[in-house]
Image (cartoon, rainbow, N blue to C red):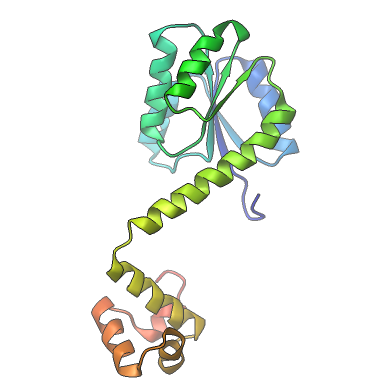
Length: 195
């Protein structure tokens, strides 16, 4: 877990006792920041209204069988596609949980929830999802974007010294200036973290 800020976990469950249990064990004991939503519709509505980033993981309670709970799975996955979705369900609705797994949920937990197991599973799922997201974003970068990022990083590393940045990249100063001009990069602005 990072030292700077806790991971944000969304809990979608109408059962106040389960939400309190998760907040007490994961929130205080494990350092996660939990936000509770009574329904999947409310979660999706909040994400769309607020425009905030998706959580690191989603815990979705499914009650009942048939199409209704599985539509909640689809709704949540459509909103936050790359986020690990963990199903919380009662033992009598295990078939619904299995169907949710077939539709892309990462795992499921039967009630009463084994919070000890959840606290072991959750960080691995978040790390795996984060790694997959970073790989995906790297795959979609164009060559120009890679070059621009390399030029910016070299200038940051050399504290704006163009000659040193060019040496780090293994190119000449003239080529370095050409790349800086092409990407609209000024050496003194690279020290500004907003660039």
